[in-house]
Length: 256
Ligand SMILES: NC(=O)c1ccc[n+]([C@@H]2O[C@H](COP(=O)([O-])OP(=O)(O)OC[C@H]3O[C@@H](n4cnc5c(N)ncnc54)[C@H](OP(=O)(O)O)[C@@H]3O)[C@@H](O)[C@H]2O)c1
Image (cartoon, rainbow, N blue to C red; front, top):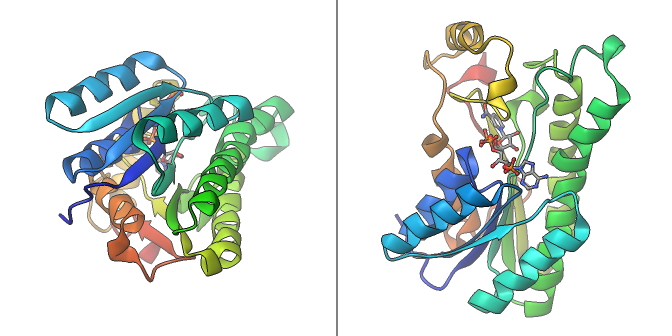
């Protein structure tokens, strides 16, 4: 793995899943990581784990849907680590029980999903861009979308699907707008993983596992630590010519 000594990254949704796996991998490579999420305990636990292994991490409880909180998290990151090199806009929710086929979809399920998955990413990217533009030496933003943005894989969750589609368009717009400032923006689309966001809400996790595994050429669901290396690569200068890309990591699901 390429060393990331001196690199500073802020990762949202860092208390669990893809975000935590990404934070661990970045910290192992030498980066200082700011860990953002709403629930404090997992962030502090992960920050201590990273520190025990000799890494640098800062737990910053914040809600990405609240501009003052996400702005404060970026300010605290720069205060602690001196700069910002990358941001992973990963926080997201999937309201398995309330995000239902469109003819029955309540407005509040649509609004809540979009407030975090799309507006939260807008607010995260805005804060990151303001800092990167101030530093005037480039940067990298990685947005975590989903294969549901590429094909009708979760038609029963239309609010989630639409929010993830919006992220691909947003990522491309940022890549074009900020390319001249050497700020890169890429989107990753993970496939079906062992646990979904808000997994405990899922009505039928075993059925999902059976159904999805049968459709995936690699024959199994993915793991969080199989997504993290791609995010770290895109955040790093090893990916210096990649911007505006949409990277699918799905065990072949969308290749069918
Ligand atoms: N797992 C999959 O199958 C899969 C597939 C494709 C894409 N993805 C995407 O990958 C990303 C990570 O999901 P995951 O699978 O790792 O699920 P996860 O473990 O539920 O992670 C989501 C994280 O986001 C945080 N979060 C949610 N709302 C937030 C908010 N308003 N402000 C700050 N943090 C917030 C959650 O912590 P708190 O609740 O404590 O805030 C949680 O740590 C999501 O964007 C998801 O859509 C997942």
